[in-house]
Length: 297
Image (tube, rainbow, N blue to C red; front, side):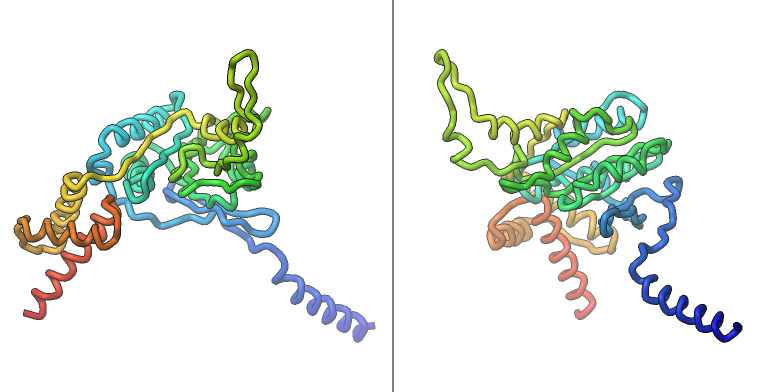
């Protein structure tokens, strides 16, 4: 009898050893008092939130030349953390102009007031109802952040997003907002064929319902902020800000002169754009080069 029992237990242990890798890992719950940001990971048929260690050095004052957009966007989450009505926000426009940076800078400004940031990838938007369900009832206020949001023709995930934003019977909880950035104002790609079925009825032009369905997604965002390419003057002011900031942290002495401006302009021309990302990259390149040359001198 003992040998049969031992044989059974050995076989059971073998089965469990083979099954254990297939089982979902045990995830620790997030302490939102300590954790300021998280990222949603899709895992099989479900998913989980993973806490992030975030850098809060970037401030709203670091983002120059977008004062109007910065003030509008900052006002919205201040209403949100105060328990007042606030809107989902769509930041759209030219690349590298500070859209994502503004959202991350909000966390540094308002984390102490209870704001938390959760990143979710565009490919995982179908999990939004699960994410929202985990956040309901928490005392903190959560901004779900989807960077570089857009949809190609034929993709259906945008309808899930529409339902979560507005229009479903089960509304998102009051402690959740969605912020998205995109290079497209209407998020869903539009084709010329979408316009083939426009009709004239009693002298009035009625657009194809397919076009209306795609535009309706952007309408779910109550706050629209537009971002435009930098002028050269704007670009140079951002370069100067970041050079001064990085040089000050490293103790580098420098003079902002015409030669430095020309070098920054050549850097931008070589990359084919003038934006905040390009300005920050040049500042890191220039300050780093000056520090290295100073050490080698």
